[in-house]
Image (cartoon, rainbow, N blue to C red; front, side):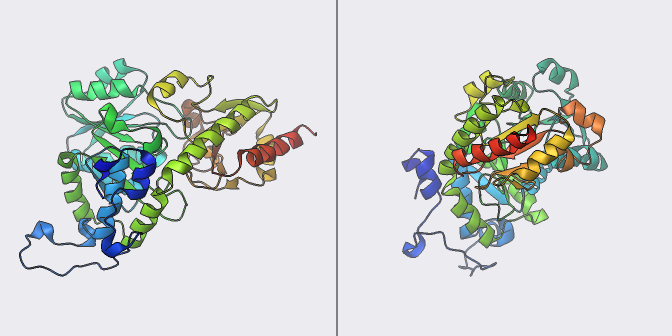
Length: 388
């Protein structure tokens, strides 16, 4: 079914990419790794899982491309596979990269620790300081890499200026849109060249697979597909099926998570035991106006710090009933973590402080549970701290 025949995210999430093969109303799992030759194919037409051109892979890729308003998409074995293959397609020995200063730890480590081994240099840039970009760009600079919303501090950079800067200097602009999801924001429509997702998170939404994807024009995706064929970072058919099935409810889930997170953030900000809440939907967020202008929704992630010491934080976390202590995000279940003890545990304390990640910082990935139940659970746990 052609994605051009409808435009709403809700309908595309269900129908885009579906061929309804032999009348099947669900995406079949084509478990075969190879396909019978017709006799007249050239090598590029041979269907093989590693080549990302089997029916299940193509179906889920078309769905992702439709939701992100892109021409084509590639699915990969993980979010980091998507990131590394995309960057290494356009960077080589002697290249230079501009990368946002507070990226996801896995991406940051790839750029800082591994790229120098390949002769790729980089500079960190602050997304609210365009003058910083102009000072650090070189004639060898090929790519500028950013995130829609940072993890875990939920900062939103000057994305429009990033696009303008990239076009002015003939750079390839790449953005990780995992936190926002295509329901809340479409970077390609703003002018970015490539969009990346850790599809393990919101796209799948059920915390039962690891996957990634890259979306863009055929011209941009073609070279990445070639590299992906060499690195073998393909997604297997069963994982493609799970990802496609998860995306059918993406719009419904994200709408609910947007609403739940807004209600929970508003409640927490008004509570006496809470020292600080970080959520783009709150007026108190430093980039609230920017988020309001760019996004259709503010997302399902919020952060908070409690009044009191780290022991108060631990007692609060231990008393919660609904949120699960787990280090991922974007699923139907509410998850809660302390970044200083999980994702940023290997980051030195001075660097964490520089990034705004205190030992007391709590990140909550809001699920689709009843917001009343979530607020009751949070309220009861907070009240215990004050002896109520």
